[in-house]
Every structure is written in C-alpha cells, then in structure tokens.
Image 1: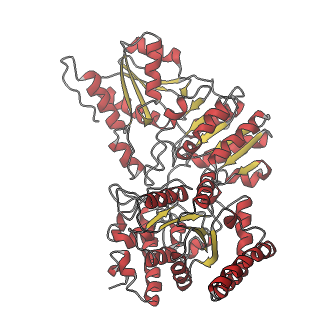
Image 2: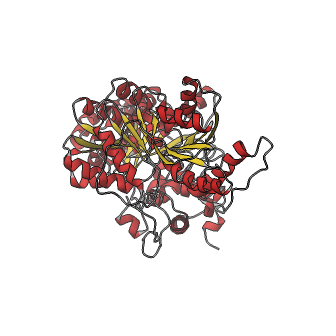
Image 3: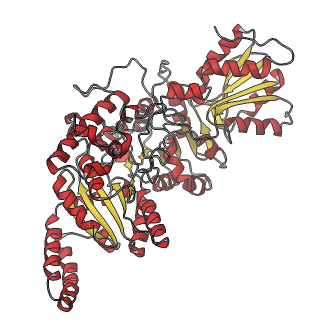
Length: 636
C-alpha cells in the first residue's frame, strides 16, 4: 500500500516521519499529473505547492484552523489530503469535485475562490469575527506573487497591518502568475530574494537579545529595532511588508519540508500579522511543466510521456484568431494598443506582444486599473483593445460604467471565455456579460457567429470612435469557416437574415447562431418554416428588423448563451413594448438564472437545453403543439 492510500485527513500526516512525508509528496505529484493528463486542469501551479501544502496541514489543525487559498487553482494537494483522495479522479468532470475550493464540497474549504486576490481580505474577516466571538484558532491565507499585484490584496494588507490581528499570510512566490509577472512589485520581490541574509541576521540577533535579563532585554530589543531600520535599508531596498505592519519571515525554500515545518511551527506561536515569503517552482517534478510553466498552467488532456496535448482536428480557436487578427490590424494602424491583465497567452495577445512590443501593455492582475488605463489612452487619441475574460471584467464594472461609458471613451473590450467555459465552472463561466453591460448607456455590444465575423467585429470596434465597444466570444474552437482575405467594417447595430421563414423568427446571437440554423432544419421536417436571424448586436438591437419579423410571424424566439435575466432576449421584449407590439408571442431561450456547475461545455449546453435538437423541440412545443394541433416530432 502506498503512503497516499493511508491519508484520509490532515491528522494522518502528523503520524508520518520526515522521510515518508517526502515520499508522499512524490506520490501526490504522480497522482496530480495522472489525473490532469486525463481531465485537464491547472497542473504547474499545483505541482509547485505540494510540499507547502503538506507543511501547512502538518503544522496547523484544519479545519479548526482556517486555510484559504487565493484563486484556488493550486488546491489539488489540499483536496487530496482532506478526504477527497478517492474522488480526485472526478476532478473537473460533471458532478465531480471542483478544480477550486468550494464551501459546499468540504468543510476544509472555508472560503470559495476562483478569482484572484481575495484571500487576505477573507482571512482578515475570519480573524476579526474570531476575536469578536472570543474563539481561538489560526487563520492562514496563501496568495501568489501574481495575485499580490491586485489592489484588493493591498487593501487587505493595509487593514490587517492596522488591526494587528493574529493572521498568517503565505506569499507563494514562483515568479509567475499565468503569464510572466510584471511591474514594480515583482521587481521588489526579486530584490528581497537576493538578500535572505538580512532575515537570518535579524532572527539570530532577536533570539540572542531575548536571552538577556527581562528589563535589559526589552531595552536592547528596542535599540536593535532602531538599528534594524538602518540595517535593512542597507541590506534590502525596502521592507514593504514590515512598513505595512507585518512581521516578515523569509524567503524560504518552498520545497524544503524540514525548513517549512520548522519555520511554520515558530510562526504559529507568534502574535499579530505575519507574512511568510516562500519560494516555489511552478511545475515542480514534471520536466515539461518546469520548462514551460505558462503552457502547463491550465490545459486540457495531454500525454504524460511526451507532454504534448492530445491531437485534435478542431479548427483554430477564437482566442488564436483574435490574437492574429489584432496583429494584422495593429501593423496597419499605429494607434492600436493592446492591454491585458496578466493574461498574455490566455487572451491570444502573445502575438501582438512579440510583433509590436512597444504598444503592448500587461498590467498584471489588475482589471480595474486596466480599464481606466485603457480609458485615458482612448481619450488621448489611441485605439486601445483591452482583452479581458468575461468573468474577470466583472471585477471592473464600476470603471467600465463610470470611467469609460460615462465619458464615452472609445475603448474596445474583447471578452474571451464568454458563455459556458466548461470544466473550470461557475467562477469562470462568462454567463452574465450581456446583462451587466447592456444596462450601461453608450456601450455597443457585439457577438460573432463565427471566427470570420469576429475579425470583422474587431475592425468594426477599432474603427468606431464615438464610444466604447464590447465584443464577446466563447472559449475554444471556432466553427471552422473560411477566413476571408478582406476584413470588413460591419454596419453598426444591423443584424443579418440568414434564412427566411413565415411561421416563426429565431433571433440568435453569437455562439447560438449555428445551433439555431440546425434547429431550423429540424423544424422544417415538422413542417415549421423558421426564419433565422444573426442578431450580431445585443446593443443596439436592430429595431427595424425586429419590427419586420414580429409583424410577419407574430412569433419570436431569442437564443443566447447568457443568463435570461437582463440579457439579449430581455432587450428584444423591451423593443416590442416600445413598438406597441406586446401581443407578439415571445420565447426566450438562454442560460438559467443560476450559477452553472462545472463539466464539459457540450454537456452543460445540453443540460441547459441549448443544443440544436432541444432548441427545435422547445420551439415546436411552445408554439406549435397547442391550439388543438397534434404534437409534432422534430427529430430527423
């Protein structure tokens, strides 16, 4: 029996000797590599924190002590040793365990995560509640150096230093977020790692002074503290964390189990806010991930022996088409600049960064800053394209509304991962963007039916100078259409009729257009003549076309990969009301007004009844199985 098979809870770790803990780390790495190679997932970040996770659970008493993982994409070892080892093979599959901490999955997951930079604020809240209730436990936040670039992390650090609560922040420093870290903070952390001698000297002196008689020891330590202020300015450019009120410990080797456990045991006895700086290697223990941690940050299934992704005959994905098209447009128009928030590879902007580096800006994990930064560049006459995942743009809603739209700043937002993203689940699904953007004045919202139309929409957005534009498109492969040589500017706010019909009009937007064309073929078998319209725009909606098809058919179906509440379909109903056509029958199809769980994109769309077959069935049942007519079958 392997050591891993004996681990049912963190308490079992404390029964192991150091040699067995190290063997366990190797077994866990092998398990993670095996499951992620089959299911996909976040490989490199999880391989980097195996020893750190084991040390934390060895020293602290979870779930009594509260352990919070920032982002949560490095929590696989945590899940394995907290009673989910036998379920780990279901990782990221439908009805299986999540790839992120979930409160409803385990009492060891005390705070659900998925977006970055929340852990310090969440941990401080738990610490403050603990003290108000007179309870006694430790709170530990684990945050990466990439997540530390976000303003929210500093807001948490600032208040934590002020309140002086007993709190441990583990800074997991692997010199990367998803893309290579950027900015002054990253450079600062690098400088700290060059001066570990400062901390060794300080700790040795502190320990020696503590052995002096009580009164003398206190005065000596006070003098030493003042001397240390001068010493650290010589040894380290600036001890930022100590200035914020944290006791700084480190940097530590994040793969040295003895050093981690010894240090954490010492930290456990200290009072006040403490920051432990741990250096880890992303992708540790798997050579391909060590050599290319960016590619192995989050990926689909792959071959363990070669490290290569499993072959696919799928057409180019939307991300790739966007990235290559932006380079083409940027080479022609020197006003075009590209902005991302720590997602150069994930958004496809690596092509722009390589070809036009002087007009590429990676602001780190700081979406709020990215939006306002883009806003002012646009007001200065440039054409900024801010590529931000749909779910991450939510973090900058106020900046989009207040800075960009209120000032009518012509920023182009390119929202990758809109709609259902699949296995990463509810924290990453981009299911709300049509709703949260459509309510803002001045915002133009587009969604392409295929990858060729994405190219046209990108040029349309860059060419539009009267205000902001948002383009939303799904994760994964495109439809596979031929990419036309010429990129065209689309008529603003105009839809296109793809199929005429007299019985019912289907208004589809974005990723739902092609399924609706297939649904129309199925309806034709049931003698139902359905028109199919590619709406293109969720704002403004083509009012003239809506009026025409509403009067012609008396029946309208809207289909969108967005929650129904406040989405594209709601916009069509508003138009019908404004046109005094409220007697037109409307069926809205879209995602339910709830958080959609994780699973493959195809399965989730099927569950949400957004496949061609289910769209056709719902249309037939809603409009044509009533009025005494025999229920029609739409299956081929």
